[in-house]
Image (cartoon, rainbow, N blue to C red):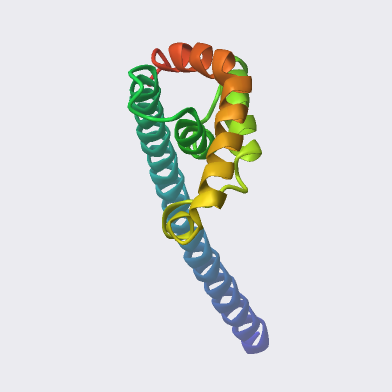
Length: 154
């Protein structure tokens, strides 16, 4: 009889130990899920904020382009970059395409310090090339800018 009673207490201790360990793991899982959910919500909020900022910047650049404060190439490079940060609708993606195409077509032209280091003859040649490329895209760039001025901000 003592052996049966001892077996009962050992079994009970094992069951209580396993139940305690299961409760500990359940609690740990619950905390991990809550943390994951909070991080997911924060990531969504960050993406929405980044999307809104990029959209606002695109609007500002499109307005500056229409007011002739920026060249088509500079606007295309900026909008092309920002368009990659936007969660775009299909219609918006089509508007961005022309800017990306012009940015790619003029990507070989140096900027900033690299431009300053060029000889005058090379600058003239590249400026002429840029103006030719801009002229080829001008109608589409202006129409795209007109559309992007009204890009939705949500």
